[in-house]
Amino acid sequence: MGTGTLPLPFLLGVALFIRLCLILYGELQDRTMLVKYTDVDYSVFTDAARYVTEGESPYKRLTYRYTPLLAWMLTLNIWLHHNFGKLLFCLFDLVAGATIHRLVSRLTSDRSVVTGAVCLWLFNPLTLVVSSRGNAESIMATLVLVTIDRFLDGDRRTSAILWAVSVHFKIYPITYALPIYLELGAPNRGLMYRRRGIKEGSVRGRVGGCCEYLKTLLPNRRRVEFFTIALATFVIITGGCYLCYGWEFLHETYFYHLTRSDTRHNFSPFFYLMYLTSDWTELRSWLSLAVFLPQAILLVAVAARYHRDLPFCCFLQTFVFVSLNKVCTSQYFLWYITLLPLIIPSVEMSIYHAGSLAAAWFSGQALWLYFAYLLEFEGQDTFFQVWLSSMLFLIINCIILRSIMKSHRSVPYERKVD
Image 1 (cartoon, rainbow, N blue to C red):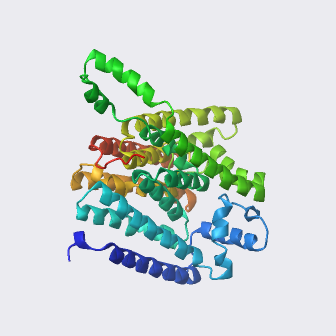
Image 2 (cartoon, one colour):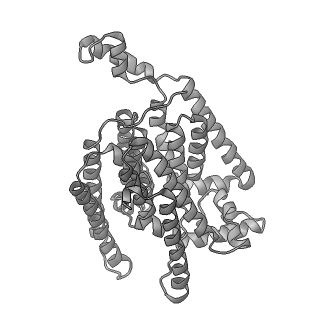
């Protein structure tokens, strides 16, 4: 049996078996080794869930900075078994894999590409380890993927609800608002030219094209409906959580992340700047704005250029957001790795080229981790080397972004309109 003919249930079964083995191994390592396998955040989730079962606020657990929905979901950690959450996160991994299969099947008829895209998620070492260690990123992955799937399938109402839920869980999917808004607009400009008998390169075509483009930015029924449903969903869920836990919920879930300036070393090269200016509050506020501007400009430019291929555009949006964010940790990488399988049918790139980019990406991380290890565990003053490594990693990410954009071909799916 060739890899291109492997059925989805078989892949999901193998993926689940591997994850269960990792959960069992984690139990052994946690009991016998100094370095624990279980993610420290999992202990935070479990403690928050325990407070919930006792009728208390999950925010009584210091460093719990997530929606209370997550703590509610993990109450079975207390009532049933402490590994329930890990199993739940692994199951979300499988749902994400099945959704990737459905999405990529819509984008290409090549079954080997579909199988490869699914395997890229299900058997990726990062996704295997993250979920089995008790990190909740698989919930976000599933929400984002199902949002895109429902959108492309023409079920815009369900997509709006799921998108609102994903923004409630974590803020970053808000960056998809502009490409979604643009995609819900008028037909493409070339089609309008052909219908009116206008040459696209002519002066009349350029002037008419500008006017037509501006018209496409106006609200229409689809846009109003989508964002009204999304806003109502977000307000209902967030408002309900606010009624339960008040300002503490808003601060810990949203405002903390919006105002966070991490002076500890992380993959963002801006951490060193924040560290050096940690005593100058007003200057740091201006620097935060200066850091945000290039990120915002690129997000708008990417949305305007690639919104007709929504999966590809969402990948680029996430990649730009993570790479240029003022705080960037390894956990953030999973946000765009989630969408990586979806762009395979849209990118024409040789295996050698793709492998070279992947090797550069891993090498950049390895160099950063080496100097970070010397700083954190050996006590050596390598702050400057960590910053240089962060700069190199940003350059590598820019090269990867440019290569992917240059390799993009026309959108491979049909849009369904309601």
